[in-house]
Image 1 (cartoon, rainbow, N blue to C red):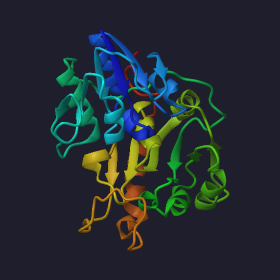
Image 2: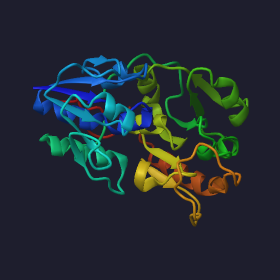
Image 3: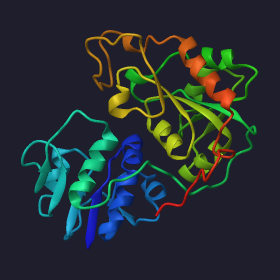
Length: 294
């Protein structure tokens, strides 16, 4: 059986779909169709091709929730979640976590329910402390950028702190965390996974990097702004004491000045210090911290 998968375009969604893609292997050969440059690294050992649909497939699983993609793939027996009639086999929409949506799709396809996302391959790590707290301060979406990463880094001293960011983000991240924090930028996913071997806590906005860190076996502390942990969260969630009427909104810009990001340093610091006290990271976690997929 040939199963064609239209993968999500954003890293966080793609990681949340990782276990679901693996579960589809029980049905036959899985070919992943994806646009992102990191997709071959994330979905290995599955073959990954461009986003264009194949000419034929026994089943097309649609993880990208797009009406445009649905039209492109309409010549195939498609299965996905959306408005009635969007796909050949359309499942009803529900208020659920994104990973649960992906699980529901593959179970409807006849595969086993997927487990937690796990990223196994390791690459080459830069030289980092044996144990450290990681910060992921940047996001292209203003409504999820928690503004207090620099204050958190100062409060964590003398604990080693390492900030991670993507290509071209080093300058803006340096301005947010200060000159005293080690900065690592632009790693491939396998190298990023290797760099996280000593990470005790990964403090992040709601981002793809946070979901990836969790898939590598790292404890994530996610600071939520406009987003909701029950829909896209991972790890320990920290948010405002009370939500605003507009949360969650998932907008990229806010006309009210992002009051949803009014989260103090202390509650985040408390969760991080609890994890630091436990001292567990992928390198020393009890049991098989990196079980082989499959």
